[in-house]
Structure formats: C-alpha cells, structure tokens
Image 1 (tube, rainbow over the protein chains, first blue to last red):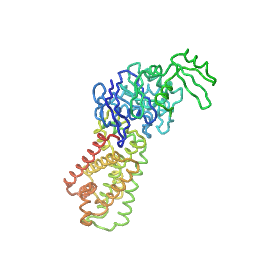
Image 2: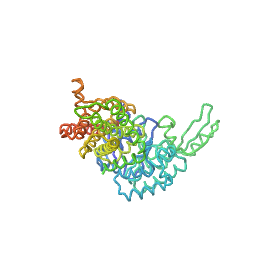
Image 3: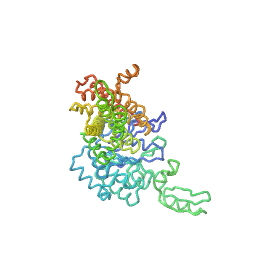
Image 4: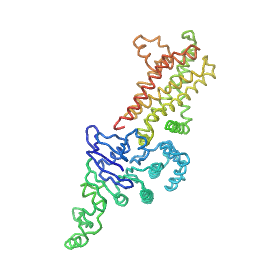
Length: 278
Length: 245
C-alpha cells in the first residue's frame, strides 16, 4: 500500500503541491488527472525520489521511500514523461542495464527482456541504438524497461504519448493484464479514454491541490450520465442530465442543432478543472 | 553489486566509442610532447635530468586527469541534464555510494588507458624514464581523484555550459601550472603555495619521483587520497540531499 502523507513541494518558495494526502491500495490502478502544471509529474517524481518533498512523507508498505531505501526502491519503477534513455546504448543494452540496476539474475533478465521486447514488437530492433529509434519505439522501450524487474508499483507519467492507436491499445492490454495479476499502477495521462478504461480510482489535482478522489464512473455520475452538445452561434455548449428522459425533455425545446451522448471523463475534466485539455 | 553495473555501463560506453575515445585522448598529449618536449626543451636539463624525462611524467599525470575527468564529468552531465537517463539510475535501487565509486573506478580506468597510450608512445621513441607497478598505482589514484571531481562537477552543474566552465577554470589551469611543464620551485612564492596544495601537483610529482627511481612521497599519496575522499563525499551528499536534482 502506498501512502502519501501531507506532501508539500516548493520550487523557489513557490508551492506546487500543497498538503496532498491519499492512499493507493495494493493491486489498484490509480489515476492522477489535472491540467498541465497541476502537479501530477511532480507527484510522480516525488514517489520515485527524483525529487524530495519540502514537507510530508511517502510510505510504501509502511516504510518511507527515500533515495537510500534500496529495498523499497526495488519495488518501484517509473516511466517518465520525458525520454530517459541512454542514446549510445542499443535496445538490448538498455534492458540489460535495467536488469543489472535492479539486481536481477542473468538468466531471468535475458528471458524476461526477450518476452517484453517481443510483446512490444521491439525484437527486430534490439540491436538498434536508442538514437536510431522512433519516438513511439522509445516510449515502448521505456515501458518494457519499467516492467522488466516485475515491480510491485509502476509509475506511469503519460506513458502512451506519441504512440499510434494500435500501439496504445497494445500497451493498455499489457498493463491491464499485469494489473489483474496484482501489479499496482499510478497513471497520469491527458487521454481521458485511457484513464476511464484503466483506472479504478482517479484523483483530480488542480494547481497543486487535491480536489477529489473517486472511481471514474462516480465522477461521471456526479456530473450526469447524459450530455447534450448544443451547437449555438457562440460555440458548442454542454448540458448534463441524470438520465436520458430528462435530457430528451430538455432537447425538445431546443431550436439549435444538438447531439445527445453519454457523459465521459473528459466532460468531468473540463467541468471540474475549468479548462480544456492542453 | 552496483559498482560492477556501473563498470559494465562504462565498458559499453567505451565499446561503442573506443576509436573516438582513443584519438581524443592522444591528441593533446602528443601536441604537448612535440611542442614542449621536442620543440622548446630538447636541449634543456631540469634537476640533473633531461627535460624530456621531466616532462613525460607530467604529461602522463595531466592525461590521466583529463581523461578521467572528461569520462565522468562530461558523460554524467549529459546523462543528467540532456538525456535524463540519470533519472532512471536515481529511481533504481542502486546504492548511491556504490554508484559514485563505480564511476570513479570506471573513470580512473579510462584515465589509465589514456595515460598508458601516451606512455607507450614515449617508450617507442625511447623515453628516458623508469616505470613500475607503483607508477600505474599513482595513475589509478590520480584518475580516482579526478573522476570523483567529475562526479561532483556533473552533479553540481545546472547547465551543460557549467561543466565546460568548470573545465576552463579548474582543469585547464592545473594542466599548465601543476608541476607538469616546469618545476613548481620556479614559481613566485605566493603562487607556489597555492599550486602545492592542488592534487595534480602531487600526482605529477609522484610519477616523476618514481620515473627518476627516487622514493615516492607518502605525503603526496595521502593528499591524493584526501582529495579523492573529499570529492566523493561532496558528490554523495549532493546526490543524497538535493531536493531538486
């Protein structure tokens, strides 16, 4: 179980996270949603010890995560938002390096590495240097690298940015399968469909403040399950309703064209965080 | 063991770039040998030895210093600020002390490689110096000290330019004034005092003593060890405590 306790983070006296508290249960798929600059990446970096908190602490299985707590760090891997790969290494070497950093036995790191690279379609590129890979391949390689040591907790900071729809679904299959086997994931993403499909609970963060934690469907229910998009001369406006009957009753009196659809997490994002996707 | 992982990583780096590394390591020392040794000091004597016998240990010392510092300082700086691949190391369960020691050993081996190349070249041309196991041990220690300085500089730097500035303000002056091209005794008293506390002065002096067949200074050994530990501890504290690395 991951416990975030009263976390505060300042950069040059500017508070970017303020008194953040939440718990992620073992085996959970947990989402962190917020607009750019909300503090999601900072939160991921704090859990992975790339940054240290100004105040508060982070516990995994009751033990504080610090840069020197090697036993705890063995249980966590991260897929960062930026590429964090050695440009001079080839794909095999990147995986080998990760296996060594996580002290995996030789045979296991070879076998698991091969399986992951095969699944992600990187096997034929295994002798290519990182600098020769496309953005999508690098992204997949970062995920393979993070999954190699079979960690208990994987931190995914926008892991599917730049991937084509097929690759994205391939990645979703992989991580949701691992989640069902008990691996815990924390995900930040700007793809609301991804968050809605994968996450069991979602934390909404805005300007360093935690607004709410709830399952995606509950957040949608709070807004209303049915949405009507009304095309007005000043733009498209959304209206939300508890059910289809109420929505249709409202639509009867509309003179502007409209469409009726199910509410989704993107609606929640826009409504709750007061701005569109970046 | 994390030290072996870092050595593996340094080996991969070397394996991919060995031609460039080799050529780069040899250019400056060969130019120094040609300019100062053959050009300016062919007929000079220093402390009853030929200038060439004086010069070669100094050049070996500065070569190991430059190769070790660059192998770690430049590479780690790129990994931390440009590639960000250092983030993956920092997030991994690698004991940071072992990581730094691994970098120091790896950098030191690169320094020894460069130093040995120059030594080999000077021997081909009949270098008038003696070399024994202690000579290589001093090269290793010198490399350790400057690799540790490289780790420290790479961690403290906030931009790529910082590491180049560090090189310009710290490494370059040492190259020329620390008992490498001329004896420290020839310097003005105030500058002599300052130069005598710098690490390269001692590694240069030690290599020269060994190459002349004289007893090596224990004080110089101790000074190099103190510098190595000092740079290593600063780097370790910085990596451990820095809130925004």
